[in-house]
Image (cartoon, rainbow, N blue to C red):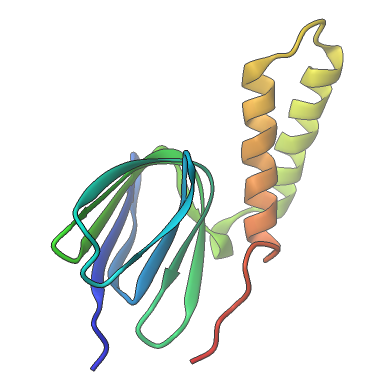
Length: 140
């Protein structure tokens, strides 16, 4: 029997995922990290990037996030995300439009604009996740 984690991913507007997993990979502010069964307790900040949840069946579910926090305690992983979107729910055209708006803002700016750069990074992350260009599907 596989040793599993209980994982919950919560965004301000809804619970995005709740269930068992073999592992969770998240985009930590100091680099990506993975949580497996019996991981030491921790709290970590996450940034823009993909979250990967590997289910007991070996399926890898990908989410786009724009940051938040991860808590690991007693084989329970709780992710409180600013945003978290399953790859299957990302509207690619909307993400492309957001990327274009951010690029236009950056081109018009006289000086580097942090908000536009952050918006561009979020839009590009959503596109990468939606188009499956982050990680590869693992098979049992």
